Amino acid sequence: MKELSRLVSSIPPSETLAVSDKAKALKAAGRDVVALAGGDPDFDTPDYITAAAFQAIENGATHYPAPMKGITPLLEAIAHKMEVDNGVKLNPGSDIVVTPGGKWSIFLALSAIMNPGDEVLYLEPVWVSYPPMITLAGGTPVAVTLPADDNFRITADRLREKITPRTKALMVNTPNNPTGRVLTQEEYDAIVSVALEYDLYVIADEIYETIIFDGRKHLSLAAAPGMGERTLTINGLSKSHAMTGWRLGWLAGPAPILKLAAQMNGQTVSSAANFTMHAAVAALKGPRDTTRAMTEAYQKRRDFMVPALNAIDGVECMDIEGAFYLFPRFPNSTRTSAELAEALIEKAGIASVPGGAFGKSGEGHVRFTIATAMNDLEKAVDKLAKVAHEL
Ligand code: PMP
Ligand code: GLU
Image (spheres, protein in one colour):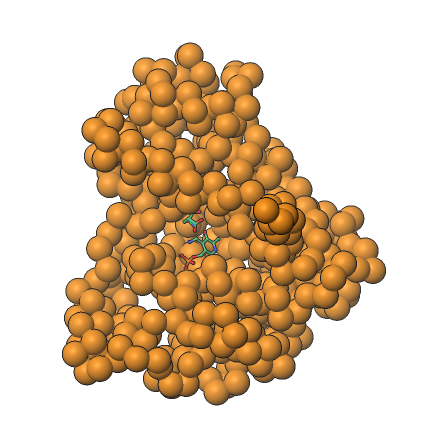
């Protein structure tokens, strides 16, 4: 047989998806596994959203939608949401594309701006899919390493160190997967000044926007002066409305880039699902109390988990400011993060993601999701306390 794709063979499979599949398979096979691996809310999608989808199906929204890049009421609802929540003014007709999940909007954003040899900076620890997507879109991924012992802080100098004449864009994710960090005003200002100084595009992944703790404020990079014309915002309903399975996200930004993104969407996936888009209109126009209640629950779980993990000998866990992941380390262990994750599942029945999946600086850590019911989290702490000395 002739050789398969070298490009696709060069990227690893998604480890977050692989470990979630593995945890589910072990559970199905009868193993007592606490699944803290894949980041998927344990809450049901709110009823008023599923009702809108059923209604849309009954109304015949089972064919191709029109326009394909997003039905008009949804484009308008997204523009309204981004103006009110994010301070970003968009033209719904030209500045937004609706995608099957936030993940695809990241790939569209990269594809629309990339030429061979262009470098894209990402901040490490990094969500598993950014570097492979940069490669698949024809660019070169370049890591900006953020040290754990400096609270993964972003500074202008750390960014500048990695900039070359080929640097095209910077990817930022706040609230962050896997560190749980939220951009501070100083970090925001540093990113804005570097982007303006070096004429960079910024891909701002705000998918965890609503999951933010202790009254902190989410800062949207597209809202800063001079940033609207260079920022591509990624968002969606997977996390805010517990809708991971509906596959609904969007890309928003400058019209010339969005024109290419819409073209690419049309030539690949065609569109997001029609009735899902109707459900998304209901979600964006509906009450916000369910989203708020989910965030409050995540915050309570964080308040329980962080001290409980730190109370275990051999476990160190930073506090988190948003998203639903903890990123503990095991300072006494000599195991790699892959060995740690393996030992956690074998000895304690806890499924986690090895920190190394998030880049070299994730080594020594594992990622636990707290988008998991409180009684499972309590169980995980008990199990971990029993085996921590063996790790
Ligand atoms: N960005 C980040 C940082 C994520 O963790 C995820 C995973 N859900 C996504 C984007 C993509 O989300 P979706 O499920 O909507 O594709
Ligand atoms: N984003 C989630 C995670 O990091 C879901 C899995 C995925 O899309 O990679 O676990």
